[in-house]
Image 1 (cartoon, rainbow, N blue to C red):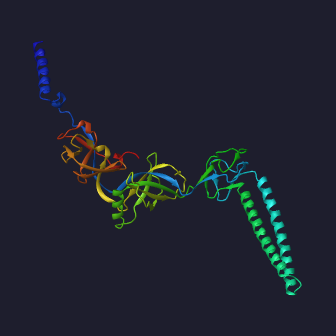
Image 2 (spheres, rainbow, N blue to C red):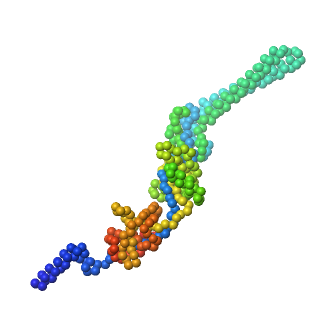
Image 3 (cartoon, rainbow, N blue to C red):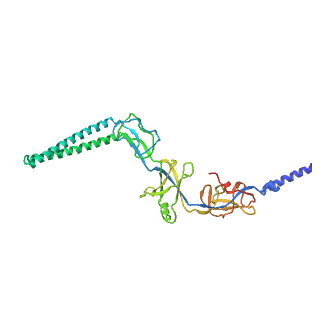
Length: 375
């Protein structure tokens, strides 16, 4: 019994001594080194990229309005339909305007008849004057009447054209090809030029994206414009995905906004799948056409403290080293390391919480594709 108490006391003393010295009791019995996942730093071709907030804008956008007064007839479309150029989409009761056209036709015909009679009278007066059987006064009067009749005919024709134009306005046509929005006024309502917008038609393909660029960014872009090919223009949608079509820069505003000291830049996209909509907010990515080769690591390998960003590397003897680094941009889950790391250095990408500088670990190398987060 005494020997057992002595053995127990010795064990307690050993545990207390280990605690005081800061060494875990299990470590005295040869605990295995912590397991970590490591991945070699890679050389990756990444193009310089700038990101801006932009808004999609239709190339053509038309608000349809009534140009004459009348009761609105049946609609010729469903909300959201694709309409062709010059397709009739609204009608206004035409009877009143058709009657006006018929009246102007009658007035034109009457004026034509009056001109025919005036021509005949002038011809007779001319013949009588030639044979000295008529007077000069009569000839002058017939000439004046013929000119007046001709003017009356031109006035009647002009009034007829105006009436025909008013009649044509009873058919409201789309001046462009595009998609028509919802109708703002129901059939049977009295409409006029003061009734506001009846519906809006917007073209869908191609579509433009407008985004502001600061003077500093624009000057830098202009200096680099002659160095290589035009930059690649991409869009990032609301869900974070990249729009598959590439755009083309085709316009820079000719004035600077004094409030923001920026200029509006425009890019055009084909939008064949109609995924972009007028007024939609997107992120515009401008990429250099010539990628640069840089050192990259998975983004989850980086930690941050008061001193700055750092990561853990593992040498050939499986010893951990805390490495201070300078970082660049993030692209597809890969972080650019601008300073502090060489290609091939084994970087800890999982298990950083269990290690510290100088510790021996049991590393397992993971393939780059497996270490990258899913997009």
